[in-house]
Structure formats: C-alpha cells, structure tokens
Image (cartoon, rainbow, N blue to C red; front, side, top):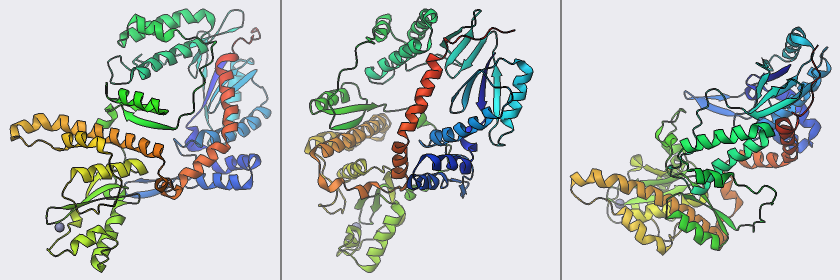
Length: 486
Ligand SMILES: [Zn+2]
C-alpha cells in the first residue's frame, strides 16, 4: 500500500531543546552557541505588543528547514526502531514522508498511533493510495499490476495552469525560463511512458498563456547532454527594472564590462495591496528624509539608523549650537530667522541598503534645488543622468486640467528612473571600487544577518545531503518492485 505521512505545522512546532541536542552532536560548541542564539531570539510585534517565539523555528529563516531536518532525523530513528511493524520503505523530505506499507490497514493505523505518541508536538496526518495512485510532493506515484511503480507530474485539483503570460512586462529571458523549467520538470519526474501526455498538456497550457507554437518548441529544445558553457566570473551584478528597449540596452553595455544584469518587474500586483502587518512608524526606519525650514528651503539627509534618532541629533545640535556637526544647526544659526520644522519631517524613501540609499539621497537633493545641504556631503550623480532627471523632475507647470493627465506618467517615470539610476550608480560605484564605501561596519546594522549567513554556510554540506535525498525520492526510487499483496 502506498502511504504518505505529513507532519502538521512542523516549523512552528519543532522542539528547540531537542533539536539543539542534535545540533551539538554535529557541530563545534562555538557554532552550536550561534545556533542557540539565533533559534531563541525570534521576536515579533502584534497590536503594539512584542512577543517572543518560544517553540518552533521562524518561518522563512534559511536555518529553519535545516533545524527541522536535524530534529526529524533523530525523531525517525526513534520512531522506526521502536515500531512493532515497520514500513517496507520510508523516504522523508523534511515534513513529508513517502511510505510503502505491506502489513495491512489495521497495522498501519497502529503504526500511525505509535509515531504520533512519541512527541506531542509532532503529529502526522496520513493519506493512503486512491485507485492505486498517491500524490507525493509534486509527483504522482502509481502502482502497476506487476507491482512496479509509475510516476508523473502531480498538480493539485485547485491548480489553474496560469503562468507568466506572454504579454507580461518581463524580460523575454524570464518568460523562456518558465517554459524551460516546466519542460525540465516534466523530463525529471515523468516515467518515459508519461512524458508524451505531459508535454502535450504543457503545450496547451502555454498556448493558453499566449505563447506561440514556435516559442514553445524552441523552449523545449534543450541539448541536455552538452554541459553549460563555462561562464567568466562577473565583476558585479546590476539589478534593473525591466523597461523594454531601455534597460535591456543598458544590460548590453554592462555585459561588455563583465557586469551581469538581473531584471526586476517594475510593478507587481502585490504592490497594490495593503500589507497585513501592523504599520510601522515611518520615522522608525532607515532611509532618506527631508526637514523643511520656514524660509522655504529644506535639508535632505539619509541615515542607516532610524530617521527619528537622526532627527533628535539634529535637534540637539541646533539646541547646543553645534554648527560644525549638523548642516541643519548651521542653517538655523544663519543671520535671518529660520524655524526648522522638525515636526514636518518627511520620509522620502525607506531604502536601507547603503548604495541605493546614498543614490536616492543624491537624487532627492537634485530634485530639491532649494536645500541647505553641504555641498561636500553625499555622493555625486554622474552628469550623464542630469538631462533625464531634469526632464522628469520638472513636474507639471501647466493649468490644473492638465495635471491629472500629466502627473501620473511622470511619477511613474520618476520611480522607474530613480531605481534604474540607483542600481546603475551602485554598479558603477562598485566597478570603480571606491574604498570609502566598502567598510563592513556600514553593512552590519542588523546583527542577525551575518550570523545567519555564517550558519547557512556551515550547514551547506548537510543541506546537500538533504537535497540528494529529495532527488532520490522524487526520481530514482520508483522503479522498485513491490512485494505482491496476499
Ligand atoms: Zn531656513
């Protein structure tokens, strides 16, 4: 009998203490302490109250699947060795397990009760074969008359067969990648007898998603025996919004300088939706801000800490007359009367990364010619960008009836160009290797990040083992013969 077992909400229920015992057996005390630190300091805020996660691992952390797997490895050792009747085959991928059972239904129920009694947090749900078929991960396993197993691609009943549409504003390479990925999956998962149907299905689906027969055929044509050409190591990567005929040309320019380009979609549906998380105080983040003055001028600044903290420093410098420490204080102490309106501080951007933030500041300073920033502060925008920025920041000076018509496209253009400029400037900066900008301390605002990365690399070898297990589950195990049923 084909059976699949699934642990209910594994990540949020992994017992940390037991999981740490496994970690300490595998790693040096130093690394284990880092694990302990990361696993026991997960906090979140809800309804203005800060909570600590006491059980389980954080959803979305790269460490979580690794920890969950450490725990499950020990768990299954105990569960299987203490079971009276054991499965013929037990193949687990994190929380999903593929089982072949040959002791009948009653014994199977007893086995389920047994593994559910080992730890109160680890509860399995069970699914048994239906019409000799059982879905496991994205493979549909079927049992043939002679006891061998067949396998093909599994889609959930709710699957809509909707993929990236041909007309979507994405780089053609990304669209081709979707076609290729599904083609490769068909070849990896399907047994030879099932491939023809799967490819016919994919062809129909892609046609429904706007692709021509020619495009589909071309995507399916993969020379699988020739290895991918050796790529020169690139000097840097640029992240650009995909704007047809604009950023793909920039890509070609960059490629000549051995800089790789990654295209990001400009607008996504998720951008239009409200976040489900509690709104944060806009001043509590890092970013670019603007402090207005009663004289009509303004100060544009940026900080990697919270904007409110930086504002308090400006206020303090104004109070104490530290004109050398703050351009805002210097302005406040000029001959004319200047009332700095700290309460009207605007957040212009919540960009936290170093280069995007500095470039955004430079663009905002450019957009606000009436500012009292010190000229030597911040980075300079390459002159090449000036005509573009001038064109898009001039704004609608026309009568009000034109404003609605003009405003929108201009804002959209500014947004696009802002991020295009930011990314490209970042690349140019990196390529020219300015020494002032690469000190590690500037990047270490979040203390967790480096630790998590450290741990991720420490566990890579173990991850490789896990993914090999997955691969074998998904592809290689199915030609096994089953013992005929009595
Ligand atoms: Zn002023």
